[in-house]
Length: 622
Image 1 (cartoon, helix red, strand yellow):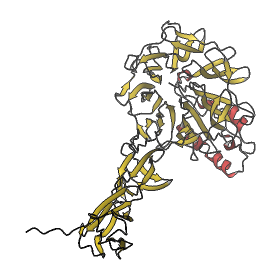
Image 2 (image 1 turned 180 degrees about the vertical axis):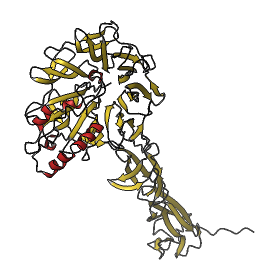
Image 3 (image 1 turned 180 degrees about the horizontal axis):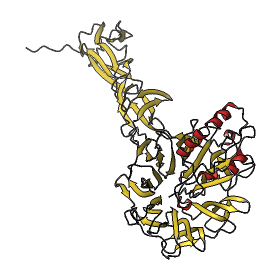
């Protein structure tokens, strides 16, 4: 995965030479710290992040220089502030810590590992979990692959350290000590890096004479010396990519310590870096690009050596670095983006800032928790393929805080937006002026398992909330928009609901008579109480047409003009009267009364009643 190796400068790199060049000219002189930070191990034994100052060392420095700190804080300073130069493209998120810590690695899932006050931790789904320890001593989780398998080491009380591998399924597994501490007091092993094939790169003591050699072993395998040629007395491996290509250092009587690459076929190969002395390789990406640092005739140099052998120097513009600045690269991703730490003027002990570098834009400073102070220490240590960066930033209490820089604010894990599903479109028959409908968003989902909220809007206005609300709607076509939110992100889905009215109105009437006698030329009530109702529109207007089988004035019918009449009643109903007459020359008269109505949806109803004025009175049966 990504490797943030550092090598052997310990905090000596904040030496008096550097600090004096970075101190505030108006301040009391900065101390030479080269004798204040020491190690009980051989300097070559240092691995990943060895040149980073520890929180313990910071606390000791502040205690030792307490009087200078008080004086420095009481004076007026013109310390350089770098806030204006920090990029706004990244947001800094602090991870929880009991005292101090740092993020050493972050994988492509956004899962981070590191150290919290001497304990290894994993940060996943917004939750920090302290990992188990071999010795319950000071531990470091150094790397994590995309399967969330972690490697690191645990401090051996009174000795060195032993490597481990951890996964949620298998728990803590010791890498072991090829040479036990009973043989050699400073026997060690450490897992520095792990790729997605669960191939661990690191170094361990393989000889009772001391020293150590690199290894590249599968999880669960016994550690074996990676120097298959036996050409080198000592070696280290501190990063490995998905192709099984690793980087490290080798030592022999003729070469001393030099940078090297490694693969399972060829073993170690010395890396040719013309003009660069004492190089240390920090990280290798899957393309074979390597970032590292060393020294040349101009002083320190940081670089990216591309897979084709091209060497590109990392540099900062004069606004960030007006003179020589020490640049520590720690990681490079597959896009060729490098992250690390740059040491700049400002503050009492100098200012160390986190940076991100691209070949196109050079070095850009990342946001930090505080802008200036007696001691400013920040570093970007790991970058994944999504551009998330892990590291640490010092706070106003001079404690290093584990942080993640991201182009999106991290409130927890990387969030997946929910998927809204408003269900299938609906077509419903009206059941009245208002029809009850049910909306159903229960098919909506969220891959993160977050609790979802639901809102239903119509024409931009929220009309209902909840997963499955009900509404009363009139006849029309509606487009509802369901918005589902997990509290961070949301998504929408539309549903069309059509309420139709295909039910015709109902005509109500009372047929008083179908047969009239005698033909006395008087108006006779034939149909009464005519009205029409509709389930949607309620009362609707009724049209009545009366047709006669004879003309108004026929022979022998009494010579009258208007032979029917429609009367409106106070209750809104209609009565139909017809004249009781017929032609004396024919067989009787038939009135056809047609009652019709239409509702707002265009549904029509008809009712026809026939009333006969007989020619002769029907004879009664005897």
